Length: 133
Image 1 (cartoon, rainbow, N blue to C red):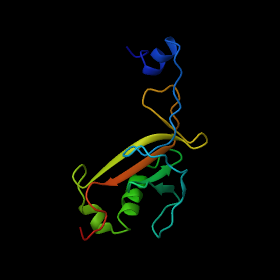
Image 2: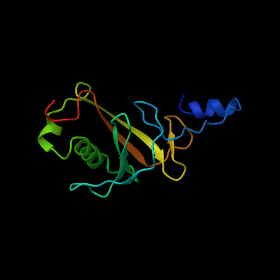
Image 3: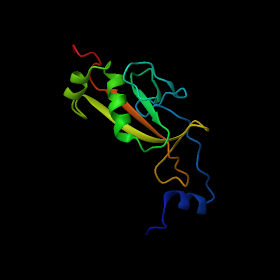
Image 4: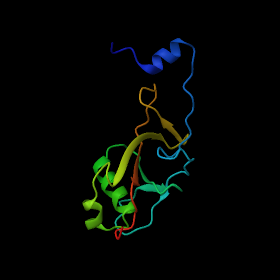
């Protein structure tokens, strides 16, 4: 039924949506707020890195997904285009996208009543991030 959403069921039971502080989806460590990313090919995205090696970029509007995906891959691969395009999803790397509220520094879960338009794009090498690996 279209009106049967998880957030509606929680609300009907008197449960509030738990705040979910921004954390890495791979290791669950708390993330710092996105900041300007240094590099030559960046398109003005904010981003960062986790201690586990995951790299992320923030797309404020959620409408630049393709560009953000390419940029996060390049950021994680040291701007080496050939190496980045030689990688295979789920074999060499994993990529995840999460809805993100930058003002509250929170992640929204699928089905939540409020889903911010901002997106965090995460890239994590499953092997080594060095092209020589």
